[in-house]
Image (cartoon, rainbow, N blue to C red):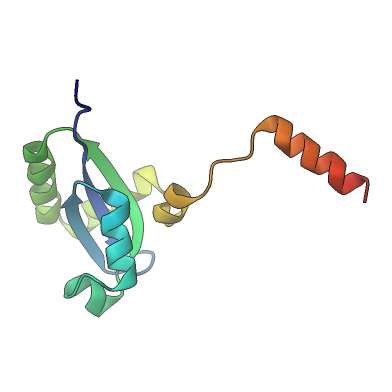
Length: 118
């Protein structure tokens, strides 16, 4: 059985409370990477909008597109409140998504013991 497809609605900013961009994609990491690298010409490239501060996952592309369309019609305060509700520190979530997994506990302990012995 095939795995269900995933789609994401995401919000990028250039800085906290700055310029907002809302998009939809079937590959969040690839798409945000494209924005960050300046591969996506136009609005995000022109305004330096490349920090991922919010995203939602969907299994139905129609639902994702509908959500994107609705969010784009929201007033600015609602969009800022949405971001704040999930990401009050306005962290760049892309950095967290691509970060390596934490070391297994046994490896962390071994590294600490090794460092103590030096």
